[in-house]
Image 1: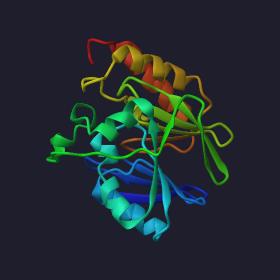
Image 2: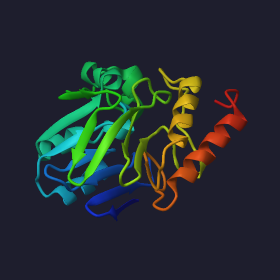
Image 3: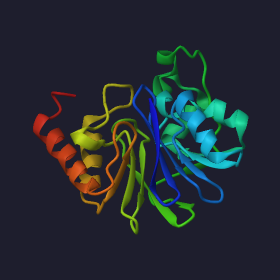
Image 4: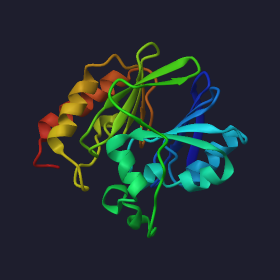
Length: 223
């Protein structure tokens, strides 16, 4: 099941309750998409865009966040953005980092037009997102933070309900994930838009602090 909701003015959440990641679409000029999800999510994205070319930002390389891109790029012109660490994995088609064979795909590559790093800025209409490097789930995971609107698009670094990203895939690191979650817990966040699961529009900071408490309490042995 896919649910589409306007979370804030011109910012839409495409929330998946299956294997696909969530996607976030800012209807700026040009529109900005954060993660394409799988094809079922991409279909809903294209309904929103109605043929407009768009900027596509990937929070990390995993196929559940990037797998719908091929379908999207057949329908609209796309300008792609990712961290260098995970972006180069997409360019090379590195299966150990993309995990596309888990989904029955033999080869998968995406060309990246812009590599971003800590402090890079992504403009999207009235929203201004700063790139935060948050390794742990993958080496090149990033989050997007709008300080003025107190929005965090967190990819698979942290979720609502006290969840964090897995670290048992190639390139995962519990110690780096813990450091990333600690960093995010220090931010002023009202709207938390994670890579999977429910969103939080009132007190996202409390959700991040809960995730930090769970990770610190359970410790590396669980992961």
